[in-house]
Length: 302
Image (cartoon, rainbow, N blue to C red; front, top):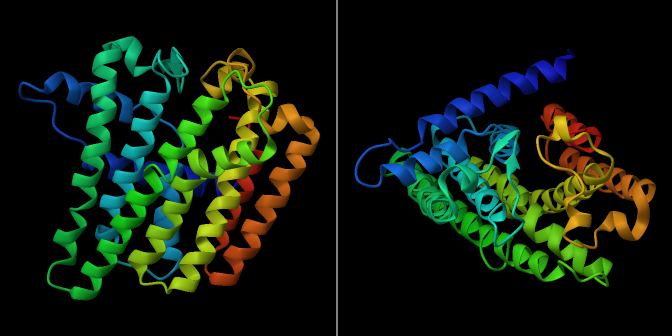
């Protein structure tokens, strides 16, 4: 295992611990939905978004980790709710996620829907705990407010939800254009990666120009990540991925890969990743791990 792999493993482990600290206790008359929420949250995964947020915060000079940690947990809750709803019979109807049964297979579609709803709302309850850390410091309070606005915008109808809408409409539409596919990738996937980078920078006190550049980094990384995901849906190993391959073909979805083929798709992943790396190097000299993380994302096989 190389130095980056060891560092990544340790950072993911640390991120996992932070997320667990913010999960709700399974008690009361609503215990079942809390169980379903925690089942969904503890299914594993790369913890990519909170990890990127933490790295962005530290890369831009943030030192008080207690200020960013509520947002790290919140963005993973939002990401997880989207997966829970994505797997529902009314959506992609997937039985497995991250190598185990999806939430609706264990708890039923109704409770899984409520679990997703609960995670979305609880994400904002959690993020607002950053106000307790900011206290009476007006500068920190202002940063938290700006971060909340980014989180809401990127998760909502002009962000991830809008991308999901376009994705549903693309199913069975064999004539989807490249512009439509990129729109889906930029909103369904990239929006929350943009959010992670931007929130980390905002909470660290970065200026608007820097935050704007990191938003572009997130766009490139998100689109490249999703194109790579579509490549793996064709050539990946189901055992490594922890989910069925070939779902795009099953759902009659036009993808970047179905238009351009695997080789050109891989070239586009490489191009976008290189542009993202160049932008990261523009905004910080303390970016070695972030650069390695972006490069790792393009060569992943799971």
